[in-house]
Figure 1 (tube, rainbow, N blue to C red):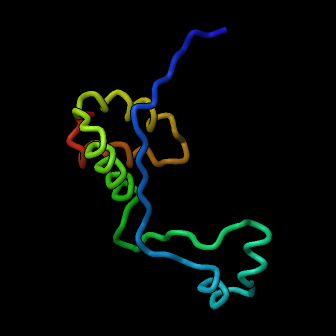
Figure 2 (figure 1 turned 90 degrees about the horizontal axis):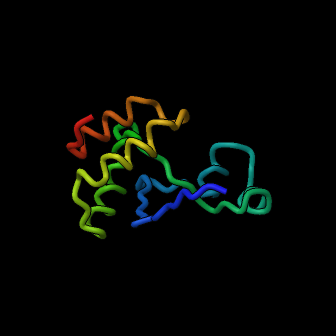
Amino acid sequence: MSDIRVKIDGVAMAAPDKVLTNKDLEKIVDTSDEWIRTRTGMVERRKSDEHTAASDVTFKACEKLFERLEFLIYVLTARVRADLKPLRCVPPSIVLILFAKLRIDS
């Protein structure tokens, strides 16, 4: 058995401001609020505008985390690198953009 231990110091989240409800979707496609709720449980989802990048939303979450936990930026550097770089679903450029916004040396 591995002796790897993990400590979660804090969690923060952010989401785009624009809310897209099931009623909004009813206007776009042939569906209903009831159909979506019974199959997915979703009532609303968040949508970025054309001027908001994924790194902008991630940056908001990082700011919240810093405020809440008063992290020093160098403490987070290794964690951000370890957590974000292996993710293939996130374009590699988002890591560099986020590092620049957070003033982390990549």
